[in-house]
Length: 103
Image (cartoon, rainbow, N blue to C red; front, side):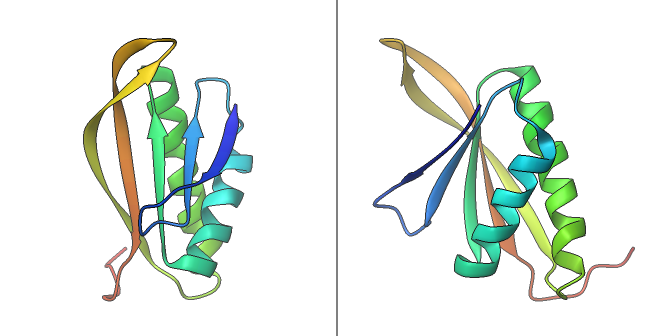
């Protein structure tokens, strides 16, 4: 599942990733948002979803390097409501690095 929704935060889109999300599709969404807005939020609930999200960020990083854009992410925990239950999710804030990382 890949869902993009408009939020009132300073981030253009919230990308929700599930364990069955295609990493290349999520990576394309991340790269597109980064090119347009310079930051993105990726949300995942569970180990499988978190794995797919991190892999997608790694792939997006490769896509963006071709444009000279270097990205990094900051992980955090957030509480969300899912199916009328409180759940802990991982939020990965993706930002553009203004320094060139060493390989």
